[in-house]
Image (cartoon, rainbow, N blue to C red; front, side):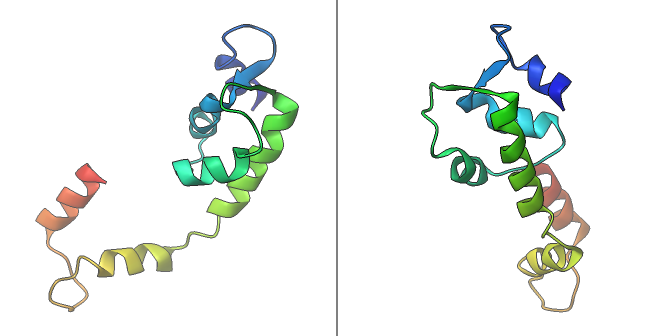
Length: 101
């Protein structure tokens, strides 16, 4: 984790800008929304730089918050695109979803 964090450390001082937290989380395999990132970083100024020790609890909180997504949530999301209500969506609709979302 620390190696990935250091990739965003442009000054070599062991810190990254708060504005880079979302990118660093994504580099570590997380997929937070901007809303998630803001929720866990609101106490920091946008131009502030944070250390790995400050970043790690943010990573852990995001990781725990996002693990609640399940297959049922995914299926529920797809139901919104099931126009006929028969449990199916067309391959064209699926292709469109996968390329635009």
